[in-house]
Image (cartoon, rainbow, N blue to C red; front, top):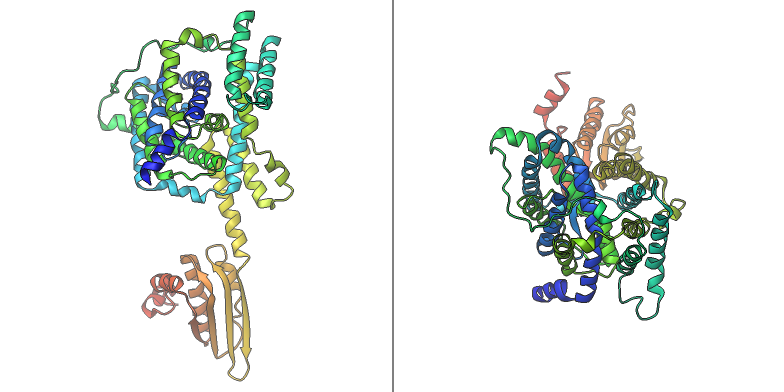
Length: 497
């Protein structure tokens, strides 16, 4: 079974993976250079990182077909570190980032993705689509008409080429777009910006580099805050991207293995002079849409990237940026969940608020972690509020025995604890009170405290109180934290009053 799975991951889609990996490698180059510039380092730092991370993650990652490399989300976190302390401290922080991510994998923190609701994922996807599109605007601002013409022609090829019988489905249209527009631009001698204008490309293979920093506590104090931030943002973006690729390919992935894989890949990048990176939703979508499904597409994307920048740089330098802009606009359009706009009228208001908040925070801060955390927090609050509404207390009165029975139904926790306590009439003169909890569940110490408060108030009024029907989990937490049946603790709680 394992052998079959491994064989399928690597060799189940050789032609599709190689073609998709080629497209991804071409699209990675200008982004890796741009992210290096953002971080304030030489372009080769981002290019070497993208090569190394893609190759390693292909082997050790938990999501076949997902592309990881140097990213903008990581680059923006490095700016201050590079500015204040230089490249060597960035390499040290990259190594520490990897170590923290490997630890997160062993601690099974990947399972925390279960707390991210569908509305947060949708908001994340839409925000990323907007950011990808916005990142292309500098290439389309204050330029000649040739740029718009090449971009429009590129988009036409991307969307119309698949409609051609026989050949249309056999070659990825983004690859056709890049090759065609490069040939047209070169032979017509168009005066437009090319990959070569982005920055100097490396002309040598990467070599082993141990960061030249003092190995002491002071260094750790400098790099740890940056490494922790990069580890969290990297894992968050990688887990979200894995979830999206799971949906696109209708397959499952191992999130905890992905955490470890991202960590190992970042350690590798740091040891060859590269910056930290993570999964890239844009490139992952390009890969999937171009037919990439297995680990081979990610491995080839990394290897072909290195071959291009080191051995084929004269060819690479003439690729017009407008052709790559067309590919990224296609990614933006394909990434955005257009159905979410229609669903705004059908979905509950709380779901829409969570989705839109995630989008707005990500776009406003350009920080995916802030948006996702805001979305998760809001979704949790809305969920707690919704669940609390399903808790109610009904009562029956036995006149012969002057006995009142309260039947509690639903979930009692911090948000419904006050509502639970408010349903009891402590002024009623009854001899006996039974609190029936057969259909209730107590979740936390707030709920236990509310039950203690109710029982003690009734006893203070002279009623005999009996609590019945506790399920095993509720009984456990009440036995541990409750005080209404522990006389010595009641005195402490009441403070002698």
